[in-house]
Image 1: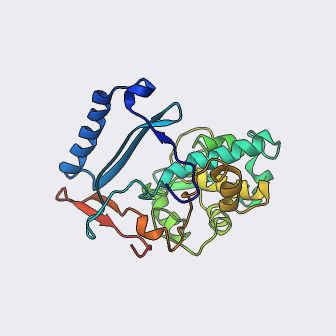
Image 2: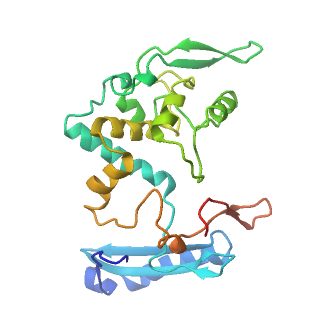
Length: 266
């Protein structure tokens, strides 16, 4: 745990109504993933009633450096940022600063007048038509807005040209600028008429900024993370935290683990 954080007390599994032998299966299964080369390392924790019944560290945080996973190893949470953003939106909804069914252009005028990409038999393979209805906060929360990550053939080049961010790369861009450019990209489908995982939550992040008057990282820190004691959760780490960051690995074509490069000097 980081300095200044409350640390939950340890307990035997039986003290909190759990089974040592059953929790040992969790350790065995996690170690199996490491032994089979399916992951570089992992950290597990099970708590009940405010006490920790199980904690385990398995494998390596960094294969090249031979750094083992430690209890205070930091991991990228990637799209688990999405539920934090959605919580922020719902907090603002409870405060009456965001309406779930209002047109998004009420808050983000740059997203008004959206066009929708419709595939056809033309030489381009598609044409554009005006959206049948305005996108709403509810559409963004449920990934039914029509925004994607630009993985589709017809959208890939448009997202690339607009420099819509994705993955683990760092950028000097702002969420305001990215959402502004996103407004010029057609939707994959009419709002509410399809589902696509992707950039909807990025737009919600900008909505939080506009509705709250705070930068997204500041809102997260002051309203959610620090009140919950999540002192090690950030968009960008301090120099002191970087050595604790686990590297990210993906599977290469030969089945081996391949490091996913990032801008952090770790």
